[in-house]
Length: 324
Image (cartoon, rainbow, N blue to C red):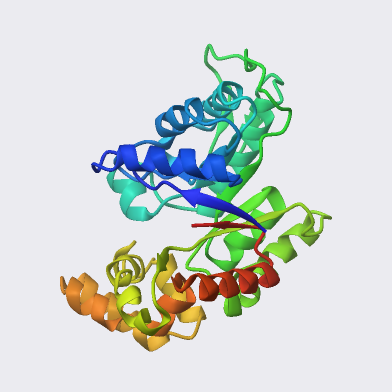
């Protein structure tokens, strides 16, 4: 199992620290550092900045939001970043959520699976430097009846195949990710639930594509807090607002992927309570309602020895890159 680091968002006053973390991870031999985007800093600019000041570590988007860019633009960005980094770029994609997709980008959040599949097909085709034509439900290239013509990418990517990841939570998305991607970006992973909530669905997708899990990168992110094992409750409290935000406030009452994941892990009643309180404006109450066990299962808490044991459990569960 390899290790990665998540740099998160930029522009919050910690940019120098984030860059120092990336450089230290590079020195220590970490496999990859990821940068995120929501509706603040964009990942592509951050990754070019980090790649210019590191030497060996891969740089990856976790994620580029699908509603933010046309697929051909994503292919251009991926090819450029791979060239600038000397072949160290990993392309992570995701549909984001309905609030961001429709509220920030003005893109209807419908048929996310079909949209993702078409998007990936166009990106992959564009990066082969074939003349780009495509006929799908969501994209048609070139547009019919107009002056557009099939054109091809003018730059040569550093590598013929840039690793492509998809952020996936639900069973259908996980299965499709196993079928069409090279890796899966997971959130709130519990080692003892990972087979049931993620790996079995990824495996089904791989089998659909005539592949095994060999070479497929299972890449969850786990927040980390080091401290005394006798102080786990206080360490877990650090992540209560984070967990409550996702389980309670991401998406809408009808469409919250993280809430559904918590339910699949056995926290049906608790997930409903967290969401009710968060959406009513009681964020502190929502955080207080998060079970300690849920936090402990989906983070790395405690002494170095305890965290090392937990890492071993994730490796045994099928994780191939663990992002901290």
